[in-house]
Structures are given as C-alpha cells and as structure tokens.
Image 1 (tube, rainbow, N blue to C red):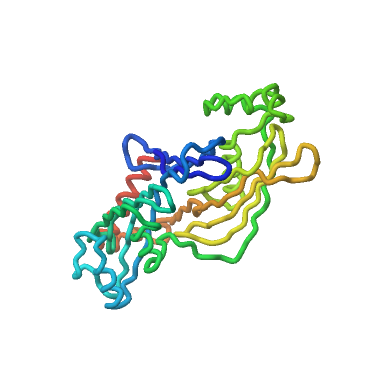
Image 2 (cartoon, rainbow, N blue to C red):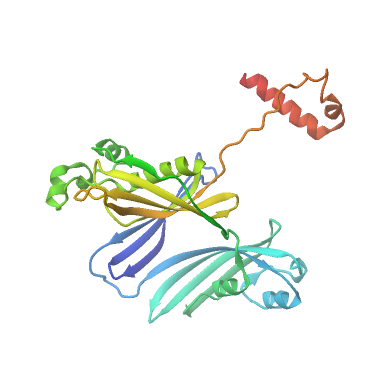
Length: 321
C-alpha cells in the first residue's frame, strides 16, 4: 500500500509498504520502498504522508496528568486509569494530506496502553493545520519507545566481494529483466561501460556482509542507493557500531564499488543503517545423573514448573534423537 507521495526538485517520490506473512498469520517482514519518478510535476504541493509514532508518556506528577486529561483527542480514557509515576504507551498513525499554501489535513488514530492493556483510543481529524496536534503533543511530552541507546563507535572488519559477471539468473528470479541489468548492448546505448547490478541485489550483498562482520542476524535494514555498481566490479562493505536498541546492535554501513576507470579508487554506491540481533545461543547442561543417581528428582517432585520443563525437554529429546 502507498504510504507517502511527495514532490521534490528531482521529481515525484512515492513510498509503498508491503507486509509479508505466512498462511494468514501475523506479518513476518515489513518492506518500505521509495521510488523516484522523474519529469514535470502536474500538481503543485499535492501529496500525502502516513506518519507512525510509538512513544511512551511518563506521568511524572499531577500536572502532567492534568495536561493529558485536558485533551479531547483521547477517547475512553479514564482519570482512574492514568496513574502518577506510571508510563503510558501511545501508538499513533497519522495521515497527512497536503491541501496547498503550506496547510494540510490530518486524520489521526491510535491506541493508549498501560502495562500492555489498552485503556483508551486516539481519534482526531484536523481539517486544516500546519502540523498535527497529536504528533505535536507527543513530541513535547513523549519519548520514542524504540529510542536508540548510543554506544562508543566500533568499526568492524571490512568485507570484500565482487559483483557477478552476469545478473541474468537474478533477473529471472526477481522478474526484473530491465535491459540495463542484463544486456551489454542496452548498457552501451545508455552510455554505460557494462550492465549495472540490481539495487536489491546490492542491498542483499550488503546485508550478507553485515551479518558476517558483526556476527548475528540482521533484523532491520535501511538502504539508500546513491551510485551504480557495474557487473564484475570489486565491492567492499564497511560498518560501524553506533548504538543498541532492544538488545540489537545498530550499525551504519556503506557499500563501495571500485571505479571502473581508476583502479583503487572506491566510490560510494549504497549506504544505510541496520539492526543486528544476537546470535542464536543454546545452553546445554550435560551429564544428568553422572554425579549421583536420581540427580534433580527432588526438584522434579516438588515443583510443577520444573516438572513441566523436564517433561517437555525429555519429550523433545526422545522425538528428535
């Protein structure tokens, strides 16, 4: 679904979102992509943007509670549910439609939860304003729920690679058979020395290099394409730790390609940020019964929780091996 349409000097930028799920279950992956359409703009100052915020509002004292309860943008929120010294979580989605002369229409909705339980909702339509009242309130009184904790910079080992001589297999797999990616003749007509590599393939290479350098699965990646990568070019990916978020390491990364006309001169092609999760860890406690007979059975016989864990592990072991 489209989430943004905005005009820039270079053209019109359209942002779309895709959710990937399995058998109708909760989405496993969210993909946001922005595309540039060059050319003259047909309508000035027209467009829309969907803005999402997930913030925590800490009710420090009665004054903050009073400000919170005075707003008519909340619904079903009771004063008895707003406790001093307790944080509220507000999840908001606001759609901004630009109507001209610097003004916009805002349609905002969301939820208010405390300790995971919904205690209210958010709904407000603003026909004409320069900014969204709900988002302005959250900017003043809230803190981002997923705020990054800064960390001392740490540079990981640079990963070297080389682009494929031919991207035909990837073109058929992705169904992106743009001649600039697969045909030397089309590339020559466009003034290029060789075909250029698909942007998504460059992003996938960068992700693979980040996982190898940092040591863990990439759970989120943002990529900005700023240059071209020619077929068979040498590549190098570097990444630097800048912080942590929810246990994941946040890194800035760059993928550079060697200039085909100047060997040893590296040119930036793709850059972005990524969140790298912790590597899978397994704790094994071996030698049950080796120290003494019936070791652990005292706890097994007196704790329902220990018994449940023991039986589940025992059943898994017997089924697996």
